[in-house]
Length: 343
Image 1: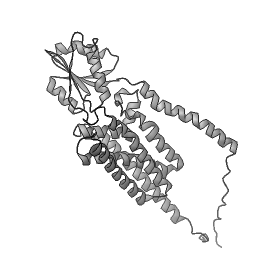
Image 2: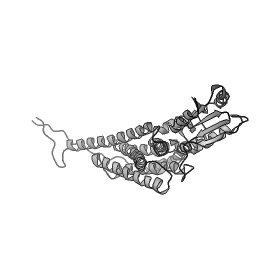
Image 3: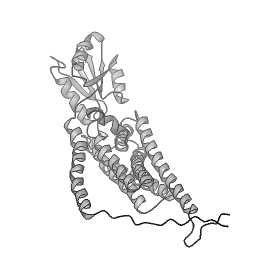
Image 4: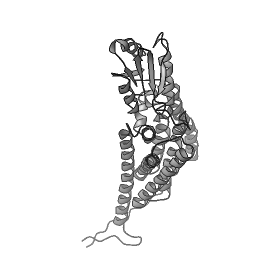
């Protein structure tokens, strides 16, 4: 006597009625507008310093009034105290603080780093020049780490977020829609990200002269950011199909892009969007690019690790989904083959 399991019948999936599809489109438009305005307009409209790292240097008796006035600005600054100007300057160069106020006998001196954020440097100049912060004294300003001469406002660095996000989403979607799986998908993602990094470095540094530093380090940063975004989208799509593709696009474009702090700084965004943005590839990519280009890699370890684990998790998900797909195909009987008899 032999037993065989019957072949399960395939029932057609019922189609969605036309009136429901029309209703879905009608509802989708205002929802997307609301999400986009929340993600982009809300942080832009609420840009202000929130525990922004700022150094204060000089004798304790001389800096005490200044510290008190800065602390009275309702949590705008997180003050770091340094013994003298060289220590404060080193802190700015190491990206421990965005700037520092040095109290000297000739008056206050403001150390800034426009390379870290031109907007923050301008805001610090206004804050220190405010009579409420330094009454009766006019501070001199020294830009310790200036922005590139070819891009003094940092526009090229800010504008790099959107192209990299589009490249990552496009690559991840292409790998998914073309049906690439496993090692082939990983190879496509890695090679395309490396080429994207080289093209971005050629344009931003070699042509626009907006991003200084070692060319290969800059290209590697661009490439790692593109790989992290592309792998995240492809990995989510490999595990969850179209829903994963939509989720990856949402994370990169609708959250990662506006929460990156590229045009200001993470500490200038409403909480907790600044922190969230640094855990997503666009924000980590901008932070690493600034560290590599202007600060000799200072404070770049965290953003580099964030990009690395996004890339590793995404590529791992692609490989896992490919392995599961191969196992499923192996387990299924070939077309026309009768089930294996038992007994």
